[in-house]
Image 1 (cartoon, rainbow, N blue to C red):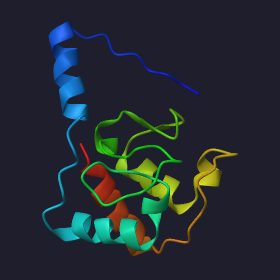
Image 2: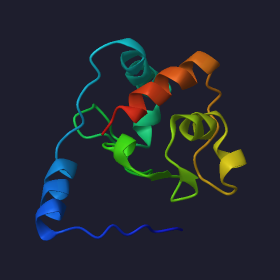
Image 3: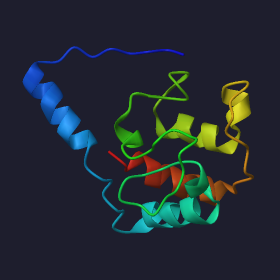
Length: 121
């Protein structure tokens, strides 16, 4: 597992921490809204949690502010829309041994889900 450390002033860290405690903002329209529907329909909610979103997941990473992270897959990938889409399509090809299953998303579902998750900042 890779770890990145960011040195910040105490004030900046406190502001970051306060933001992290806030629930995710719901998408307002477009692909991100469709992505929230895919997140629910494909049962991502059973493993992942997002504060402010009706989720029950506790076994996989919390995705509340995933769009603001610099990496995905425990540091294996830079957090870009392209890498997120590749991850959603086939997690095993991006990081062998990962517990996230390949759930058979269609191309448009990956696009919508990527827009939704990238918007969670």
